[in-house]
Image 1 (spheres, rainbow, N blue to C red):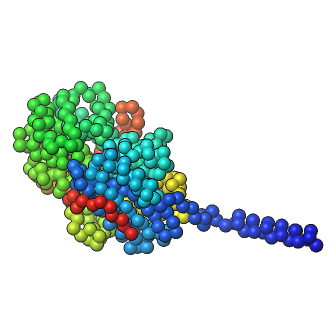
Image 2 (image 1 turned 90 degrees about the horizontal axis):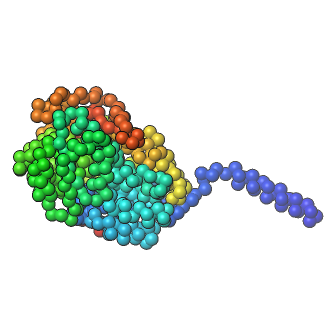
Image 3 (image 1 turned 180 degrees about the vertical axis):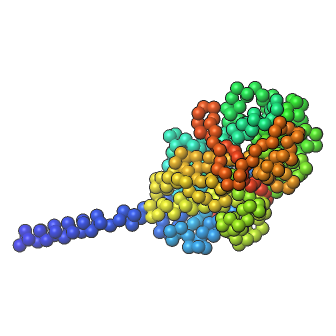
Length: 457
């Protein structure tokens, strides 16, 4: 009798084992800190105050984006809690706040923390803790290093790619270039400068003067006077919004009109160009990888239409000509896709796995033919040149021809509107993609009010 009972129990256990084995793995829910059946907690820092407060528009837009997500029912049935703190663009403060986010607020990961120096300051800590540092709001090349920092990934085109586009354009189209450089004296400025030097290669000696500034400085006006005195006919402006505005304005005031290349992080019309003066900014060259929501050629694009509806409902006070509102919308949409793909496995390991597995993903507000590919930890790898004409950025041939007599030996050929980005190689053989002028421009953003902590529920 006992023997038969044992057999029955064994048979029952075997049947139960088969049933469990047949249960899909995906149905098993897994969570780390910051995730549950009902919630996903995201951490963020941003300079809502201080010398880079213009970037506060980014955090403001991300909060609005996840309010929209929650209004639609959340992500896989979970609501997003977006916790953002003001770090004032101070790396020491960023470290303090990120530790608070991880150790006290118990976020699942941090997202779009802004600034190269600030992210450098927290990178080692987050990687030691194995907390994803996702889609860093900086184009420094160090974010594409999964071997040493497997928990860190950038999003925007890196500064080396961007600087290479400027260097190639200078060498191709500016006669006898003598180059002056203004750069912020930190990792952000150095990364741009190193990429620029690398792309110039044997022509790096054409740089005749470099002037630096500290983020705590009041003004860069004396540096602009110094750069003009070098006799340079090309100016590479590596500056954040406050200092970029000063540089543009001062150059015009002293009658210095070089071929002016402006780094993409300071291209806001409302936050940079308009305060400097539209007349002072005519002909400035920069890059684009986002659609200009106000450009006629994109007016009927489904993603631009949806972006417009989002702005009207969640950020009615926003300046629609601002690239910062488009940027934050696009990167938030990328994160939403990663979280959707993570399903019910909301562990940090799986989140990072999904973030590093995007391949040819279409993201709203990116230019035509640009897709996100995170497999090399370098999500957006292409840029296009554009030029300031009138009161907006313009990619068209007309914008370039307007300035040809002053500086260029021949007109620049414009690519058709549906052309794919061209690819070039950096001097060390690493892939770098660069220009074709078929895209519209980023625009302006107004600095939002200072925020201490805001949670989107």
